[in-house]
Length: 195
Image (cartoon, rainbow, N blue to C red; front, side, top):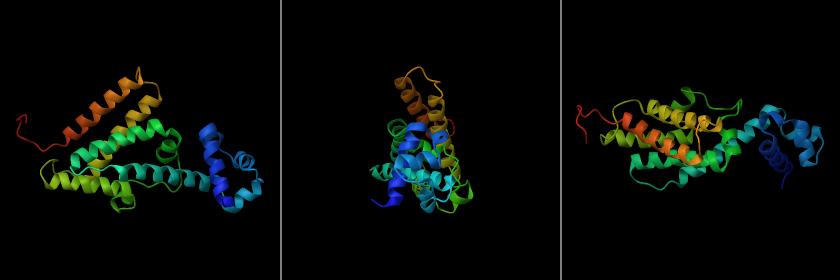
């Protein structure tokens, strides 16, 4: 293991134990068994360490997205959004690093996403485009649909983290229902006829 890897592993341990507020270069150095100056040779600022944690979180998230093996674009979207919930519940610290940390290298909406710099959003918009091409989603910009669904999912996770649901089971059911409703909101207008 390289010194950089050792520092990064110590940073992950510190972050998981103490959260972002407890992440300091001094604490990471102590957890890595190194001097604080040794940390700065590999991570010149605390922000660079937070960026590394964020990128690691996004790598973990992307691996979950890539693992979704579904041909139907709407079923794929549902499964990806279910995987988002699983990521938040099963790996909360990496989820937080990816989606809740104020990392300096975090992608900015809309330019970074429209420019294709997020591999996950690019996959999502491709599936949305596929569903739109087959008349299964209305003609709204794919990035707008992706943002709406992502905000819905992340907002529900934030509500759960704040203790706004009476049980994990209730939260999961409400999350699934809200995602289904979110996808239905983008269904093509069928003139009021219920399918």
